[in-house]
Length: 268
Image (cartoon, rainbow, N blue to C red; front, side):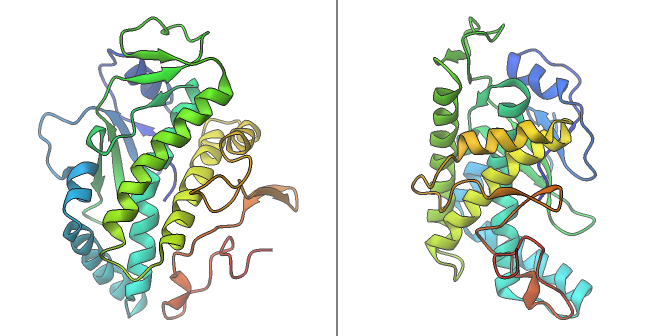
């Protein structure tokens, strides 16, 4: 999943909503918004998904049908790997986007995030919504005195808040998802590491400042910090930034498919 970047927000009335609105970078297939539309439709709260893990099974079943149409065959490992990465990209991508673009850390509680699964194509995450005004920021933030703001001393402290909030959400996901798939907890935490590392990197790329996105990733994951499985794996190869994935989406098990370039099995 690419980081959520397309903004379709008409009325920004809070600092976090305004942050999302200002990042008007276009993405092909994912929308980020503040709040849910008047008609909730097919938006689902992350907290609802985690409270009822059978919903992951429904998602994987829909994905399995799409994979069968595309490749002639599906795979339980591939559906588990795809959904794992797509879900974790919701908190990871949103956190990376606001950290990079505004030096703000939003609430990442499952009850404060919602997402929408595409219904007319592959069933990836097509939209992400933040539902809480609350945010953490730096002392020089112009909205630092806002009632929804909590100010921390410096960027290191802000990065620590982001890690803690993301880990709390990821831990809830690992606990719920592990009961539905045959993946180790190490693999699930590897996917959580990938989603955060990739999320902030792609935020930089989408905002036209990839180098700072790489620096942000190094700030968030400067070393292997439990329960993450590695430091940031971003590195320069042949003049381009790339990274080695810690987890696997298992695309390679599908008929005629090849391993991703960043797959830990083949990555240089």
